[in-house]
Image (cartoon, rainbow, N blue to C red):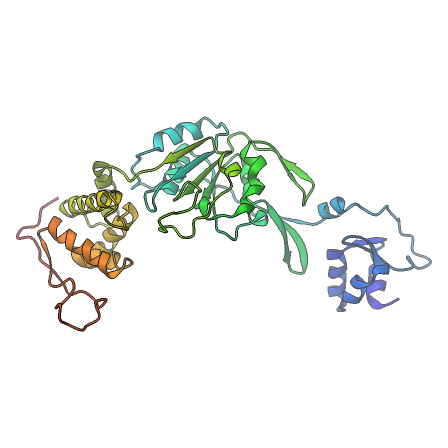
Length: 388
């Protein structure tokens, strides 16, 4: 009998789980692989005994070999203790669009899965979080990608300090707490999302990894966001968008198309964002909203392939607060677009706002300079700044 086996005998147990063997091996400073790999020591999957039994003089109670499910239940569980999952309330948020109806759904505490689709940057996820913040409802946000699988959502085994520990996933945690589960960017997922089928029907979920059946607590609901309707992106604008299984999409009670806010609402949003960074300029807010509205109309008509989102306008406000230069803020925040689109957007803004000028958009036509070189911009202050 070797050192490891003698140490296991001293525990007084007849059978041992893998984590228990690892723990004793670490204690006596030996490698447990030879013991674990010896088929004569194996009772069942993940359960081991000492070959030949305990030596004379040691009374060990021999229990029947546990089933795999029982073995799994003996593993410790890792739970992230969160005292409060209610999102923080954003004082600058302005309700619009589906906000009122979503508030009605969530306040009812009925299980009613909702799929919200719309162009990027129009406040889909923020709307859900702010509804929950106002209603003081807990929410768990899960960002979906093509790599997201059942372990990420439901839970799975992980190795911590040499021990196999079961980690519960956000879906089951939300079910138990009666929270709102936000599947963010849902159309980036793969067919691995099909593990949510029973949960999307409001039924209990049998966790085959622990043998536990989890039933949704009152108030549990699922709200998904996406840039498409789960049919992929034909125009290539959202190249990572996947085609989702129709059986998965069919389990959402309603699908909502979220549009950008109206000009009136968007100006309110921009003014509040300006107040937050202590840089209020109502004239600039008016110009930004008008500029964005013209671009969106042109986008809908198919004349351009890009759009200025409400989120992009917020980025411009933050840049303006730092540089105090309208045109510089717009240039910096439109640099993510290709050179031609950026030049068009900048040129359009100069037509909306007479207080700014562009020295050059493309340079001399006969010049051999790289047309992607930084633009030369000039900002002309109005003769008299408005007072607020």
